[in-house]
Length: 196
Ligand SMILES: [Zn+2]
Image (cartoon, rainbow, N blue to C red; front, side, top):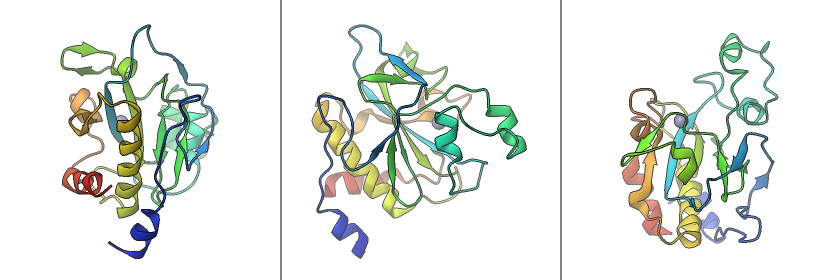
């Protein structure tokens, strides 16, 4: 553990049960959300990796994408995705800064065509967490630390969700998606989950 991790362990994350916002992070409301189907609660947590443009870290482009304010003239890749209406509940950037875009009780638009244990449309029953990253670039330690804290807060909020229900985007859309990729170290995540 480095100094950042130790000092960072002091603050426990929690979820406000009135508005389903995570503590210790900025909340920016994405227009790309709606109600979950009736009687539908989160059952799984989907881990993603995203970088915009692909392989480039830093900047506000991911945030812009989730807010429908991405300037398509900034990069040729943005012309492909600028019309997409997508979001995630949370983004954890390379510095470990967390931004929430959708309350956990609402449906974020992160999974696309997807299936988990025979059920389609995983957005209906999942929470989506984006890590700023790329399939073949190791993720930052601080991202694992913040992700583990977030997951523990979500396990407290939804006790039926366990570490077994934390899956990769590539698990629920294996023909279309590869993220968070081989660079994401699941063992490291589990170590941090146990460590608290
Ligand atoms: Zn993804």
